Length: 511
Image (cartoon, rainbow, N blue to C red):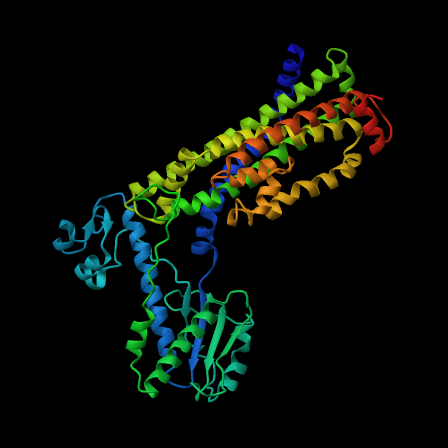
């Protein structure tokens, strides 16, 4: 047994020294950080301002579009100012240019800027703040080019605008000075309105970006409806007030303690968080088992395996390799899960410290930490990782022992990958019915038990499923490792073509 631990230590050190190990160790935290910050960064910095022309030949339809765009711009400015106020290096960042009624605390509540009070006190100077940079607008209307001849019909205007719409010519943007490319043009015909067949023409090369088109269509639809209400003698404000009515509903969970039955964000996380750990479990098992396969094939092709077998038995070599690579996987899992919990705690504390303790951004990390603390997610993840690794690593190790090259191993890997992919295809459906027939049946199939039971762990599966599947998984894994050990002992020094299935069965029987 001492030699098996020496092999395990050697395997652990050899894998830890590789660049792939360190890349995998830091890749997951990097993905978490990037996935959380990249969408926000792309939304604010990645998409340029879309400049458009709004030509209204009807004379009164463009008003609703311009009014809504002005409101959207106000919201953009207010949100940017609020964020700036939270991160300003001084407690009263606007005290240099506003009346004392603001600086004495009228616009501040618990470190949060009251925009209504601020705008009332600052008046037209509400955006003139030292150090504050106006955010660029998402959509900006520009005027028609000066050199464009006057068009009397929409068709004439559209024909004249084609060079600008195709990007062949540019036009100066307001308050910018630099020439910009025209993103789109909205042309409203003269007799555009309810009951007519004339349509608004939306000209744009980039049909994937439909924000402006959808906005215009929604606003004009509402305007048409209001006009029809007035024609029928119905007050549109009454309709709008009626449409705001909502049927109140409270979702309750009978399993929760009395007085806490109301379902909240933590219950949603409890239902779906295991799916994240299932994918993490699958990636970890596959990555670490692949590492073991490559190690065996490399040592066999380089004949290092013969040197090792001169000092240890095949059984000790196999156990040592399994233990060593399992140690590598555990280090990776500790780093991944630890970074996840650490970043959740940091983000929750950071957001709460910046005056947004009740925001969703700060609630989700706190709820996640509470979920990990109050459930069996982490212990179950550790157990199913070890059990799943031993199960699949035994198969990968056996494939490596019977093959001389990675190309030969691919023939065995194809059916194995099909087996491993089944739980991933079913993962989105299991949380919807975690104790249903599909989830229950798959839980009793040992190759799928780690993934399915991991996904059911917070859904209160029956005790018979917890105990029974665990006993079956442990027994099946022990039996599988015994059979893989018989094959490994025979095949590790064998060269030539990989054996057939019947030959593998004879090796297991000891023939």
